[in-house]
Amino acid sequence: MPFLTRMLLLIAAIATFCMAAHATSSLSFDGGGYSLELEIGDTGRPVVASVTFHKPGDVQGIVLRGNFRVKAFDPRRKELVLVYGGADERVEPFTLKVHGNRATLEVARTRIRSAFHWSM
Image 1: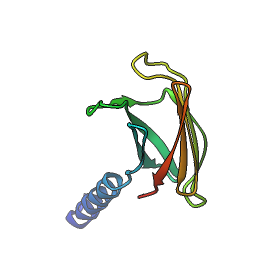
Image 2 (image 1 turned 180 degrees about the vertical axis):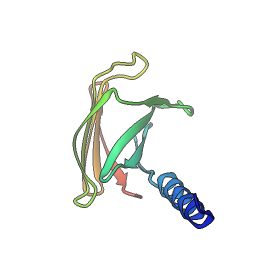
Image 3 (image 1 turned 180 degrees about the horizontal axis):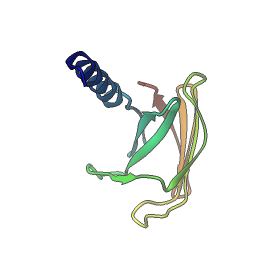
Image 4 (image 1 turned 60 degrees about the horizontal axis):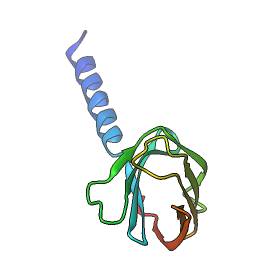
């Protein structure tokens, strides 16, 4: 393979790696002592890749991957509905509903309203 072709392939591989490295961002909810950090990936369209759930007083948090449902996610319209059914016994089932910059977290038979940060 000619040197120039190898160099172009290397540059394309590096560019692809750099784009993939920047393809994640995060969104967050803080309220009532609970904190949720949503890792957003971009596979052609934004998707919720993981959720780190913090109970009141928990600084480490528990990472949830693939065991939650995203019923709605439209960053342009700032809408999100995420449901976690409790597959990990360390995290109670919860529902997070977001409309604009306002969010409601339903967890432990409590409804917590707070701001939502769309910092994608």
